[in-house]
Length: 337
Image (cartoon, rainbow, N blue to C red; front, side):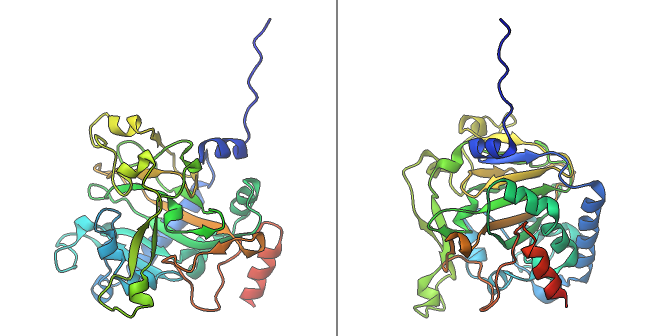
């Protein structure tokens, strides 16, 4: 008797099983080129001496660097520039010989709001259709980021869950859409994700510090980490990397359950907000840029964006809708009038 073939899982079933999903060839080469070219134009208009953009890190300095910066908080619906740690001197200025387009860690967090090229991709049928296919009914889009992972100096992104920064109640609804603009490989710092970790609780929150915002203590950091769960095994590497991650074999990552997610240009990685993921430093000479969207369910699904999240739009300004039923198109047309 011939063996019975296993049924092929749908994209939604794969996503629900692993907590992440790779969609091959999601965006065509010409769209990737538009994004890369537009980013170069934006960088050309940016004056690093004028803004003195802060360094962005995900290591133990994160509260000090992002948690005490009005520039970071004000980036929610704007286009702000954040420097790579290895590109700046102690006084915050660029090192001699470092071109400004090679100095950046990321640009965020409102490209989907403030720029037509990135807004067009964010509201494209392929994005809204995929989000609906995966089960989001009233998706709204709080955040977008262009990540550079610069050749030779692009720093690691330590183990984290996106819902730590984009928290919703009464359930976690954050969904990340990670578009690869270049090939992402083991050599230049591809994603690593831990399959099934989306079933684990959120370990900590990056929240607005009540001592600063409510208590009036101007010396207190604006943002702090608040611990929710120290009991899971993953707590030992939260905000860090598992032991022995930086060996040539990356054995520590495999032992902790992480798996590499290599991508070709145009591939999309869909990431559940509770999935444990990270990336190693780019020590190669190759670029590894990405454009990322982070969405959540909207209020019509009984979901509330936490008022303690770092990212808050100005009063009266709503997150853009990503509904695929036509309401989104009608709103965009009305906004253009």
